[in-house]
Image 1 (cartoon, helix red, strand yellow):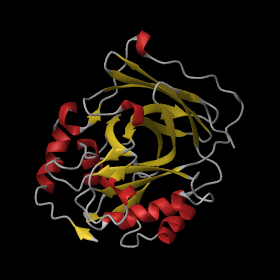
Image 2 (cartoon, one colour; image 1 turned 30 degrees about the vertical axis):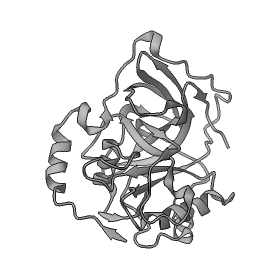
Image 3 (cartoon, one colour; image 1 turned 135 degrees about the vertical axis):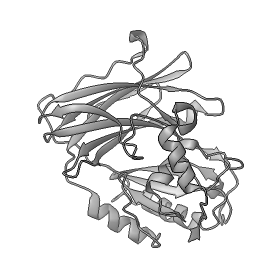
Length: 291
């Protein structure tokens, strides 16, 4: 595995804490005007709180990383395994690139994610917005083992959402319904597929095409952790909704983009654990995925 020598890490962390939306890649939640808020689809099973659970796999990578194709191959193998492919969503944080030049999938949002969760070794795969990692074991068997460890029969919260492009912004309306009493946070990330960028160490042509690359994030941060905007404490069966707005940037191919919605719940130590996530298409909607 490659060790990235981040001599500027301490300064970057300080800058991240103090800087604003323009250079963090994190968009504070913006309440769009009423005409820009898309309508969330009706709940088809209002009394149901048994939700399909999906974990999140966060790949720390970059096109300058010569060993990253090994993890790419393992992720492809797991994605093609029908016993596992529906248990998670995958995000690629292209951060192995300090100056942001040369990697078409790089973003400041990705760099901030890796500052928060990556050990500094590349490639690395972390899980559920924690530093839990497969470590140096990047084989498909190690990924499957972690999925088995983290996946639950039912999620603590379900997700419904709609997205709409309006006047240069992507507006996202999210609703969560919960199965357990807790304080929750909601975040949305913009991901892009089919990004062409030459990959060091590639052994196959498909490894030069990059999917699920994080472009931007919307939601509040907490101690360098991108957990999302806080709801009130919710009781079983209760719902909460949030609206977000992401300013669209030149260079993003919206035809290849989608939105990842994350719901996090407070733990006993005052931190937050990812309890569920879902993908919503651009200018589209999703309703609760019940078991």
